Image 1 (cartoon, rainbow, N blue to C red):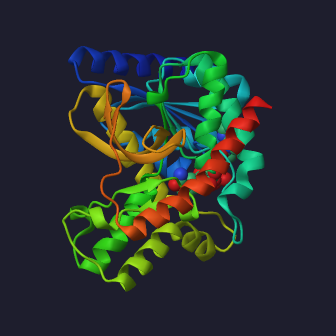
Image 2 (tube, helix red, strand yellow; image 1 turned 135 degrees about the vertical axis):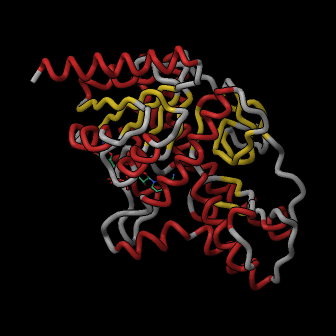
Length: 338
Ligand code: NAI
């Protein structure tokens, strides 16, 4: 009933004001594609994040159910649902961070690039709305193929005259999460103690783990390097095959997305030394986009770190990665410019 809704909205507003008065930093976060396989666990985990004061859930289906469900969690974030394109603008207005897991996932036998035809259009539409409603928001892009969807987002923002290369970030965190897990297994360590830089992009050979730069410092046999590189590059496919047609990684992806979104929010709050890998507009190589370690701050990406010393194996991997990345980037740019 409208009265009940009004009451809830009223209460929601009061709770937001209350937080603001207390001086605790509360950020407004929108999830686009919130009812999906990634979107739902991502929504739950963001509702648990104390840095979030308002959580907007947008999808073209099922947002009322997800919103009602998650809004009963006794955490402070106020949750609001938005359904269908006519509510997209309202979903985005005033947001500090927008996370995009909207779009179709892979089925066995598919590459991420096979998703281009459907997901390119979805990301383009969503970014056009962001350009209009919250052009200063930090944007985290999860929708595949990330190697092309980030260039698509950049082109859309350029066209609208609002492109800030520091605010558009492709989420490659799951590659780092997998790399940390698999390397920890080989070394017999707790994965929380392990940090593996993963650079390049987010598909097959473009996923380039820098095993020579693992922390804590360690060494691997060539057999271990071959095994780890292959497993990290094909971790996504491992999940797609295990799910046998029911989609791709959703739970580990939601975990990785929240780890990355939380880093963005801590940086917005002003925390120092927030450094993670992400796929961004970059001058680290001759390509216009590349994933590497970046330092996040109040304005998004504040520093992009060089790749550091690579061994011969990694240099060969880098050449392969750049070749494929160049064409994925071009494909994304051409899609918007056509
Ligand atoms: P899913 O199909 O379960 O969910 C996608 C959601 O997007 C659905 O709820 C759907 O209604 C919604 N959607 C479709 N069109 C939309 C539009 N125009 N506006 C808003 N929402 C829309 O898929 P899942 O498993 O959640 O995967 C989502 C995307 O994330 C896929 O492209 C997948 O390839 C990608 N992915 C990326 C990873 C990464 O590391 N960056 C890892 C795993 C998946």
